[in-house]
Length: 459
Ligand code: NDP
Image (cartoon, rainbow, N blue to C red; front, top):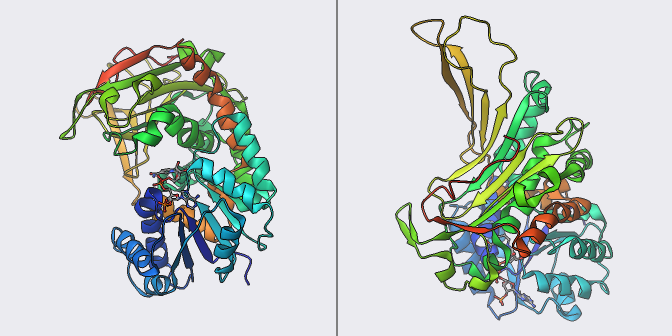
């Protein structure tokens, strides 16, 4: 046996995450890397024949047009087990079918994941076994810490992949090259030169049939507590010695330890709202509270905005505003870096020298820099110019990158246990203030840009 996983066991293989995101990404991965021999085992609680499972996998693969020898080999060797993964004997039965080192991907409801991990305590897992955990990783600091302890009873920390597929987005990975391979970028990446940072993930989409999950999470936990804080940690990290898993995750963890709600006051640094009926991108949504599966008493927000500060030498005082919403008029997925104004503009120029703005789009993968120049015509008049670049998409989609790193046994793209706890610590004061209704739950019309009166502290 090699020590990197070659058997991917999808616990919850029949579920939504597997069929919509994991299997299509796996198809793309084995199409691009046909020499990678992957045995796929699907597991669910309901009965399904191997043929029906193969059809499910094939139809998921077709969404990414995956084909070729790697795909054929995988399909020929895949099998399905109906098992209750909270039972020791059932897990053993699944593990016995693995021909190589297993990577167990927990695409399960979180409560089932915890019980499955508890059941695994009595099983001697093969050396090199990887455990891939989906979000949400716990529901607060204590539960995340307990889950960490549970996992460490099974495998070492570097074999736990706490998945955050945002870390597989090409642009998030590109942040490292942009920052650390350019002489003109890194010296400006400090509070001395940067006025504010916004990390925005606004969608035109609504609940898309996932009310059961979303109505218990909301925009804060679904996006800010997880994905956007991870993007912040990559954006703000100190230069790592190397970009291997140890150095990268150390650098990210140091940022998260220094991150807190701006000014320590969630009543001024956070906002929440939910959509009312309206139309966006040609689709009409009812008010959030009237959506099927929503319990209005949960007071779930569909748009959240929180400003944080990274309280260290490099970033002290810079507001980092993280925002994400559903049913928003404009789809925006970007990091916006607003620089401080030029230190001194020589006398004689006309027009204003607005601050430079760097926009790094998370999808599509683009970057632009808005700067002041002497424009055409009167050379004394300052004009605005935009330099734009497109980086083509990554070779793999985000979940493809995640699966590749799991099968390589490389945890660089996963969230380390201490960081998973920190991320709950960072948002805890906001959750607390919202529970106590200290921050009003506002409304915005579907298709609008959110409540107009929201402001960013520190600006
Ligand atoms: P689903 O409810 O669609 O799927 C759950 C899966 O778990 C099914 O395959 C189900 O099998 C299986 N399952 C449940 N209990 C058991 C058990 N005791 N033994 C064996 N299998 C069991 O959930 P999702 O796919 O939506 O979500 C899975 C995880 O991924 C969750 O943690 C979620 O938070 C996370 N996630 C989901 C995303 C998504 O877009 N769906 C996005 C990001 C994260 P069966 O159907 O046979 O009962």
